Amino acid sequence: MPKRTARKPARKPTRKKVAPSKGLTGPRVVVVPPGPKSKAALERKERFVTKGLRVGLPLELTRAEGPFVQDADGNVYVDLGVGIGVHNAGHRPASVIQAAKDQLDRLTHICYMVATYKPYTDLAERMAEICPPGLTQSIFLNSGSEAIENAVKIARAYTKKPWIVSFRTAFHGRTLLDISLTGKEKPYREGFGPLVREVLLMDYAYPYRDPEGRSPSECAKARVEEIEAAITRPEVDGQVGMLVAEPVQGEGGIIVPPAEFFPLLRKLCDDHGILLVDDEVQAGMGRTGAMWAVDHWGVVPDLLVSGKALGGGLPLGGVTGKKEIMETPGPASLGGTFGGNPVVCAAALEAIKTIEKALPKVPKLEALMDRRLRELHSTYERIGEVRGIGAMWALEFVKDRTTKDPDSELARAVQLAGLKNGLMLLTAGYFNNCVRLLPPLNIPLPLMDKAFDLLDDTIQMALSGKA
Ligand SMILES: Cc1ncc(COP(=O)(O)O)c(C=O)c1O
Image 1 (cartoon, rainbow, N blue to C red):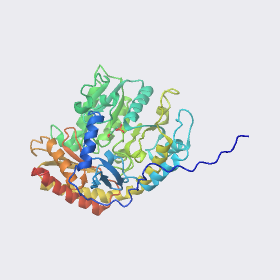
Image 2 (tube, protein in one colour):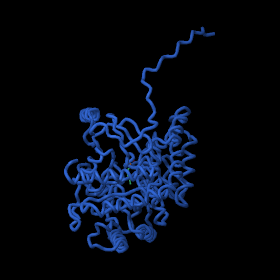
Image 3 (tube, protein in one colour):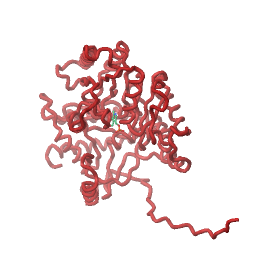
Image 4 (tube, rainbow, N blue to C red):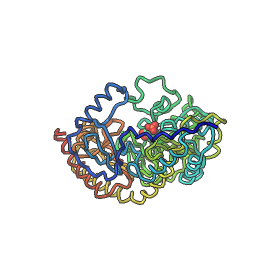
């Protein structure tokens, strides 16, 4: 029998215990941002992290809760970008964090290609319940980009047609295939070619910048006619198998298409044997006031791509689609080591619940955002347009309302000035001239109202060059 040895006394943990972020309130600016700690952090970033990864805000962030984030210098900001549309029910909802912690105590990783585990299958079942009717099978990946890649693989396996329709002002991710589906050369594509050739980049229905000034409905019709003309050109006729579209374009500058656009795209796809792939990575998961933005357009896509908010703050992407399509790729042809990791799937199951709980709050938030943004639009000539849906809005800055010449410097100045007022803002837009607002769906309305007062002041600061 092995000799029993005396139990060693438990070693004291060497790491300092981190106090939870409970009770974070704001906005509160105690040091003009970027403060010394953020500056020092950015210097370290310059030394050790590639400049290909640009940091938009000169801040080092240390903690977050609900609608607030805190930087290393103690400033607290209202987060109107929520990690680029991830924390749709605010930062770190207690139930999501608890579910992830519980799962960490059970099984962190095994790989779904090795053996099944419940959180993954539960999440797939949940997606079948919450996705548009008929979309019943899923695969989970590590990011929105990887999910788009998989959607293309699945669509090609099903249709056996290589060509893809996408949009110039779209954004579908950062991999080589994903940047092939994106029209914006700089910073996404430049220097990274050759890209995937079989992509037709078309114009999205973007009424504000319609070159012929058509009505939204005419613009939608004209854009779909252009697509029809492009896919029936002899070089590609009969070879287009998929059209991928964001139901509201996010990076492109919160472009809300006219109501006719998606139904017309659906019809076009049906007429030509093309799969409609709905990229809900940014607009989905309650962001627009419906679980999926495509629900507003009364259209059922063939494949739905999810990401961002799905993982409740942990990395997750998904493709959910019709069974006959999802089943075409051969056995073992899809997958990956970490995709749909148990901890992330456990968090996602709770994240969905938090979003469902927050959804009824969106109409009032939408009404507030609409009203306050229209006021800003009528105050400042340099705001060309405000637009949005649900909790997904943008202000598009221009040098002149008549020429609509995009003003990216002003958008950037507003973003930076926002920090001084305790606002975390994101920019967006094909011309980088939009400030986008993606608050948590459950942000208290008085706080959002206050954020608009601060935004008003911020725009004045930026316009007067005092930023
Ligand atoms: C619409 C859309 N699709 C795909 C992606 C890529 O997702 P990820 O950054 O998780 O790879 C994004 C990211 O912003 C997105 O907005």
